[in-house]
Length: 141
Image (cartoon, rainbow, N blue to C red):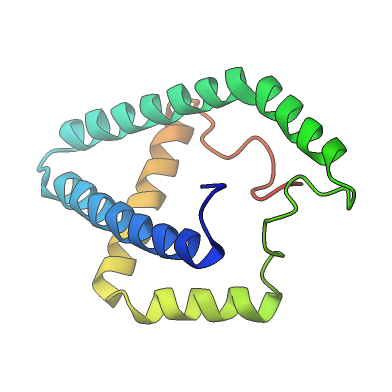
């Protein structure tokens, strides 16, 4: 991605977001098609296990990623981790992005996502698992 223009990066992100949304919707429909609480719990347990696995993989790579970020930061005169990276969106831009995403999804899909996340979090809590991020999202770049 470092060799792509900002416009190409943006297009790639938009395309990947659409693919991710389609996969997520398909996944949630599979969950809501399940009939029994046992089936739903097994589905959620598998999801929680995947989440824990991804978190462990990330934590394993974190020292290397931090070292690479610090190296890039030291190489740049302006002290940022990536001089070609565009500035973070403003509050107004983030609000506009969220509004656009909300307007391009149906109320049914949003309700389904919310219900799925509530049930996933409830199952995690019931089984003593923690699925919240270990630190705030979008922490220092």
